[in-house]
Amino acid sequence: MKIRRALISVSDKSGLDELVDALAGFGVEIISTGNTAKKIEKAGYKVTNVADYTGSEEIMGGRVKTLHPKIFGGILATGSSKDTSEMQKYDIKPIDLVVVNLYPFEQIDTGDEALAIENIDIGGVALLRAAAKNYRRVAVLNSPDQYHNFAVELESNDGEISLEKRRQLAKSAFATTAFYDSAILNWFEGKNRFAAKKLLRLEKDARLRYGENPHQAACLYRDRDFQGAGVADLEILGGKQLSYNNVVEIDTLWQMISDYKDTNFCVILKHANPCGAAIGDSATDAYNKALSTDPVSAFGGLVGFSKPIEKELASKLTERFFEVIAAPDISDEALAILRTKKNLRIVRFPKTVNHTESLDYKRVRGGFLVSDFDQSDERFEDFRVVTKIKPAESLAADIEFSWKMAKYTKSNAIVYVKNRALIGVGAGQVSRIDSAKIAALKAEQNGFDLTGAVMASDGFFPFPDSVEIASEHKIAAIITPGGSIRDKLVIEKADELGIPMIFTGIRHFRH
Image (cartoon, rainbow, N blue to C red; front, side):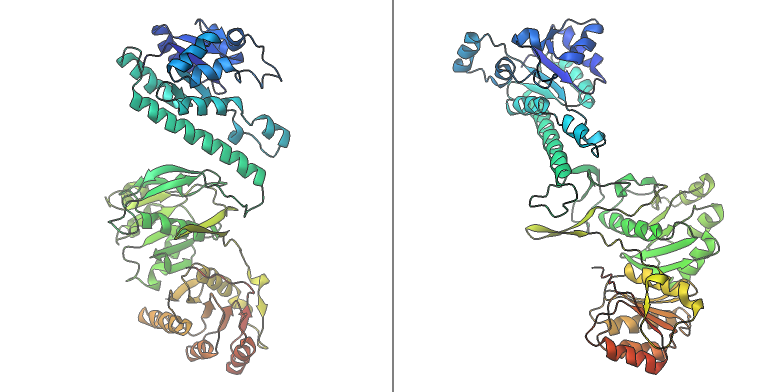
């Protein structure tokens, strides 16, 4: 199909010169609107204004200009004898190329309602859809990113565009209008999080090495409605391509780092559970303490830091096998050392790490579960002591730290913390009592004395048995959400055994 006549009406005028020059080289007649026509004319190319072509002036402040039978008839004409007869009757000429990009609704401050409404494109969307629908005869361009390749094909094919290319361009146009309309709908929904119709706006960002298992293909999609930096914004500074599981765990790592961006914090994850975590006097000290939690489980894990990685720490990190090392920054010297481990994935977090206000989606068969992200950030002063005996003031930091660690451990979670370091973890068990026993066993295996440690549970205790285990190990305080019908019995047992118990009033199950 040869391009003989083009309609050009663009909001973003970048890259237009190259396209128009290519069209002019093949004698393509150009019809254009307003400022677009002025730009083309100023560049020295012949252009016919839409108003002159249709015989109808622009009205409504330019909002109505292309919505005309001579424009849409020229785009939607199929080439049938009936269409051709009607085109002759109404003096309609075929339009073979439509070049349109839309008002920048997504880029403006939509907090200004009048400005948002003014930037809802009507004619542009209609033009794109009409041209895309009739792709067998019409080519459509909706972004300056497409101009160069289009011009190259035009040159290569003596002014013609293949059917395959037109179909690809039509698909892009429909994707653009769908995304555009969904952005407008989501704006109208505003803070109505659970609207009757929910549209996800996902844009492919990267292909991953594989899915949850090697036989599964996977991709990372960027959520266009996500506010702030996300996983797709991470800088990958070295190592193999990320896998599905890497991305899931890096997201958890990043969330944990977010809680401690003002301290020297290190966390080691394995299968999305913390198997080591600590606050130290330096990043290296925090790493040493975190590694000591469970050096066996740390093998092949992910390590994250809240502070930059320097040369000394990088050297220590290369002594062991890790899948991923991540931090808000990495010095040039440290990076050079880390890159000596060919397969090690090195990740730099964006400098500003904020909690999101977006929704969390979980795929289930035939649908999605949608909920708020678990963003609560409780501090020691938010907790309530429910026993007669009170915890020592010196335990405040460990109590707070243990609660954050339990939040990121798979339920049923029990963790033990001492001196702002994780020393025992029981995760993902079907019985909370088993988690308590496993966490104690892991602590003892790695040489930790649980005397004076804090126990944290992500859920309430339905029976006093976990409190009894805590007493056996001389635990100094227990923190739990509370909420069991047997809370009174559990509290009485804690008082009887001399263990202060703190209720948070909020639960953090992680599945």
